[in-house]
Image 1 (cartoon, helix red, strand yellow):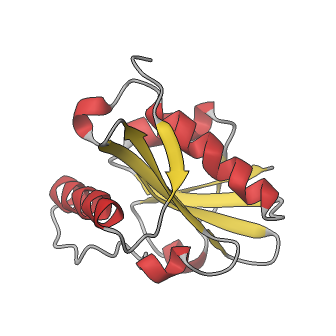
Image 2 (image 1 turned 135 degrees about the vertical axis):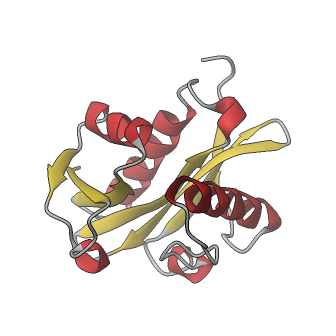
Length: 155
């Protein structure tokens, strides 16, 4: 890893958060050839509820990544909006964000985390597999999605 980013919780409605959410939405729209309104089934308010979080990774004043956590049930949280800017990939930043989201989830009383990625994101699939996540049947809004790849990890 080049530098270790500072990972902090911020308001998901802030300019930094919205910048990263927009960049992720643009990348997904390009990768999957569709128009994305920027929500990706995630609204900033999702990370404002009790037991939720929106984290960013920052190198000095530059934001380089993000991830969010929102409750699914009393015991299960969902990880959303995992993203590292393209020029900073391959440095372990996503792994650090993921670990911090898991720590926050445990601290909030969750015993399990789930997430969804998609079939054209092999780097994300590898990240989750290497972090101890296992494949599960598609859940929630992803049940009928042919592109979705869902994971779960016990905390």
